[in-house]
Amino acid sequence: MKPNPFHVLGLPVSASDEEVAERFRELAVTGAQDAGALAEWAKDELMGLPETRELHVLLEAPGADYRGERWEDFARQYGRRPVAFEGQSGQTEAPQATDFDLAAVARQLLDGMLTPPTVDIRPALDNSPVPLHLERPPLEVRDVLFG
Image (cartoon, rainbow, N blue to C red; front, side, top):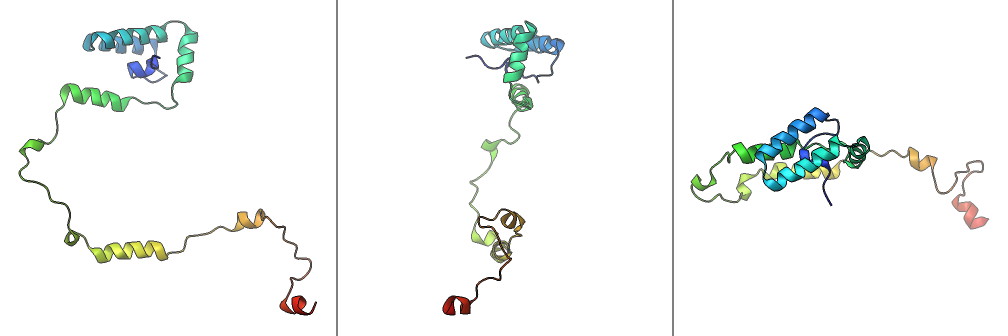
């Protein structure tokens, strides 16, 4: 099964035919032969019959954004690692207990555990499983013991 053409071209569903054609040209020039064939298929799907494009618009995930993938492509083509890990001297050590303020950590944990949560009982009162009838006074101990 082929992917969605918007995903192949890395375009939003609102892209115009000009944007589709321009993105196809970019991929055809810079991509491999397989990528170029897939980009051509995607261009044909989006610029062909309006019904086909509308089907792909409906099948595209809502709010899909391919900026992250475009960034990865850019970084692969132009970027390099920001840090040369090979040049780092020595091994990094795991954090020790002395690196932390344990009293502050304990205070944070206890504050979170001892603070009661805010509770809204209105939904429980409005939708109680047993209807509340307060017309008669509730039973008292002497009523139960002496009838």
